[in-house]
Length: 431
Image (cartoon, rainbow, N blue to C red; front, side, top):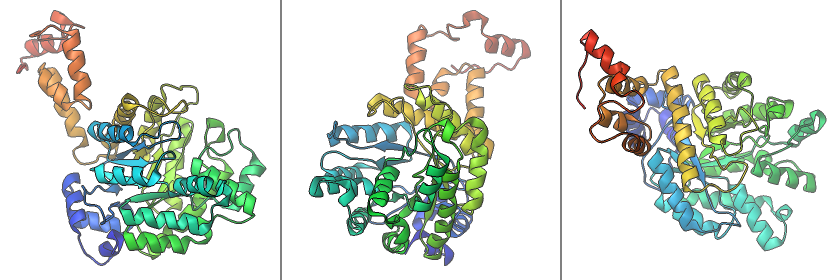
């Protein structure tokens, strides 16, 4: 029985209690959000782990993508990245493996991960079609659904499925034209398949089959944006909105079948379009949780796209997006390494926290207040503990200052905090 079905029956599950306690809200209030489809708990009961909620009124969550590739098929390195992501504060990881033994990679990640795990099943279906039949285009509908069910049975918590990518949407893309066409890997696989076979998307035409599997295993559907813009010039075009309209219809169908669902969003987008995109998604998809990649607010910063993504992510989350997918400094350039993963997660966590302050998520602003007090009191241990990356804070403090120095070397004896506190009589130095 899915979390959604139980919520609608008035049942507060152990996972709801766990999430409510972590969020500092009432379990009944959370149950109502889940029953309305405005929050989800991606929790496949086949795998025991910490339960995490995503949606309205909850802290903005962060996902980190990991996974093998043909060039780097070593799963051990990806498990190390998983550890680095979780240590940095990721609430979820997605296995995007396309190289090596895909089944073994996923099974190792599922066993190793203390956080929820997502996948994109068409990756495996396409890779297996190439290896077994010589071409991705030889993939059958049954091949795709066999992979989906296998991954659900093994314990995957949520799956990205590009169900709204229809032939009609592709037609709109062709009529309007784009600079970067389709940048979604899963979207490109499906587009090639549809055009070759002259058929519509099997994830759309056989959506009931997908809902049956998702309902049986309580796998949360993450309705993917196969037509997300891959550059600023393509943002908010007819193809993107056409896909979103279809996704809104599919959200309602999932709810009718008691299946948990969230919706994915762009992509690359100018800052002045981000809030409007969030509002459109929330309206068309009836308040379903929104999962965004970035958005990246400029196309010209390879090597720094964790920053362009964090800028867009903070705007999107402040406007109502619920789940941020990290972008690393290696985006557009190559497979991220351990340091890239850490920096990507930290940047996304900063964006999420900044947005939570604006959204007045319970407790979000208190940590900043405590940091302000620690700075006023020149309480360096507290400042380090309260920081989003204590290791880096500790490094800079020790590398830039002599042991025992009360102020930092930027101001020294001219420290504004120290001087003003003494004159105002508000000093409370505990360093």
